[in-house]
Length: 362
Figure 1 (tube, helix red, strand yellow):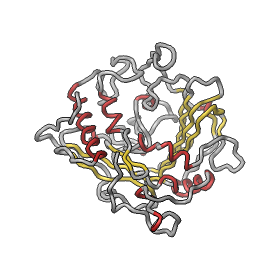
Figure 2 (cartoon, rainbow, N blue to C red; figure 1 turned 60 degrees about the horizontal axis):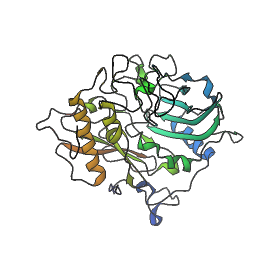
Figure 3 (cartoon, rainbow, N blue to C red; figure 1 turned 60 degrees about the vertical axis):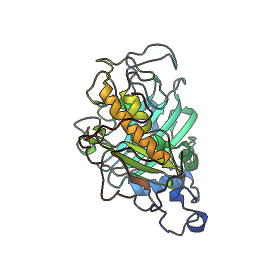
Figure 4 (cartoon, rainbow, N blue to C red; figure 1 turned 90 degrees about the horizontal axis):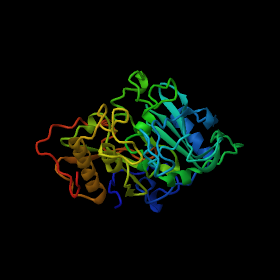
């Protein structure tokens, strides 16, 4: 990977340590003072307008592991495994902790084989769809189901510090928007409360299904997250962007190697998917929507996007028909190029000459 070269994106001069002579946090060349969890959560509340409450993972909705076969990773398969760990993870729970017309707070509690009342990975995302402000919270280990609010100074839950959470590099996967909408959680679309925005056609304010993570703004709150950046791709002859962004991300001045363009696109269109049952009417392929079985032409589209992304992160030259536009960054940074003028990638035009994935075997 190489350091990013978007010199026009820089830290607004608020007189904070780490700006100026000591480098630019927005370019990954400097740091701001790290924040305590209480300071970070207060800043998030101010930016997003909806707090992260205390909650109990056991009260969430069970994520289905339909048609589960085998025992344990890597032998276990199901119809809709998760894409973080490529496993079915029975016993995991998801819940919407709070939601208004502007903001939402969601929690995902990954079981990962732990006994009743405990989870190995608990994550919260706090997001405002009007101003794009986003906060990530994380805890790992042998975790109790009862979770205290990160803003609670007397809370005993072992939340990671913002600095440690930033080091987990959530943006590497969450590059086209704050919420990853793979079939794993999208299968909860008919839940009355505990469902991801944009997965149900009747979501109204938080929909539509075909448009989420396409035009919503995206910015990162907190001193420890200011180097995070996201950019969307436009690729001639590819239809994916008509529904959602295909993106790449960077942290601490270097591009990441995962995300929608470099990982999820190829995975979602492939003939097989790790930990997933064979594509069928009851276990349809991830992409495209309403597609059931593998389609080579669709996979070639995804690999074309991947080739564009590989060229971007390696420094080019870009293939014909491939372009990239910054659209999100830290909330103390100058707006990314194109972020104000272009809220969504344009619909991909019909190809003149199809882009051939470089060095890839479709």
